[in-house]
Length: 143
View 1: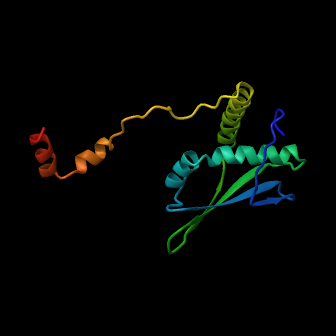
View 2: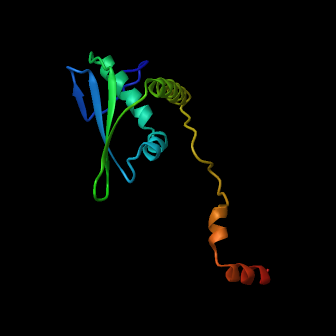
View 3: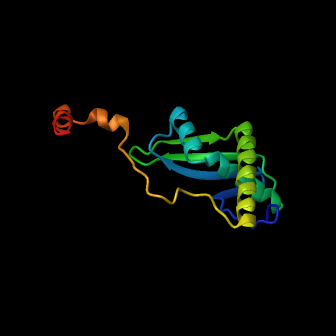
């Protein structure tokens, strides 16, 4: 539990000798530059902090968090990364804020979500730019 909230996680592997969690991820591009974006976009740093804290809470000391990254397409290149301690610390602070929000929502019995009213939605401007210009002229002429 974390501040009275039951929490769970499922690590891929823990080595007690090296005090290391290893996490296996698949990706389109395992390069350093591209996978660093995936770490942020998919919250892998948040997951790392969560798993480390969960292990520590259960008596498993963790010193390292290693990502084994495997590309999804041939030739299935592999990269191995150690997650930066500063990023884990930042993620831990974010996780704590998320947990505080969860506790508050449960207390107030109100969870913030999407608006309840119907909203108008449009395709992105980049998609409009890709649209055939003759079709756009046709639509504009009929207005």
